[in-house]
Amino acid sequence: MKWLTTFTVLPALLISSNLAFAGDDLTFEELPKPVQTTVQREVGAGKISEIERDVKRGQTVYEIEFQEGDKKWEIEVAPDGKLLDRRPD
Image (cartoon, rainbow, N blue to C red; front, side, top):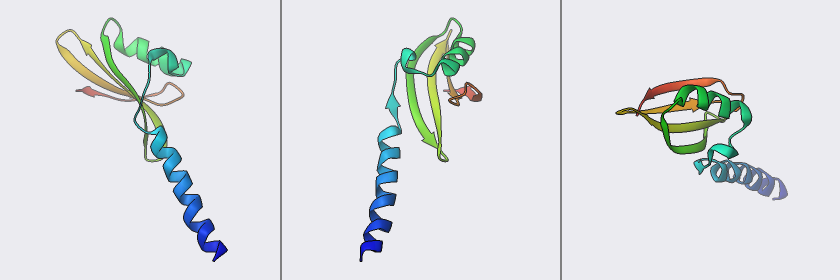
């Protein structure tokens, strides 16, 4: 019975810790420095409307929505600053 508790509780704790982490709203200052550098480069003079930390396929990603002129964009950035995606929002 003890092994059943271990195999039930441990995965539940791991999943719940990822869920608490997923979808967190952040400020620019809370981003890791490499992510800040990429965001500054990609957004330029645009205006950031939302920054979110998420988990996709088990990996942390930072999603940044911004407006550049009359176009809205979303980028995804890895914790090391690598640009993963840039698309119209």
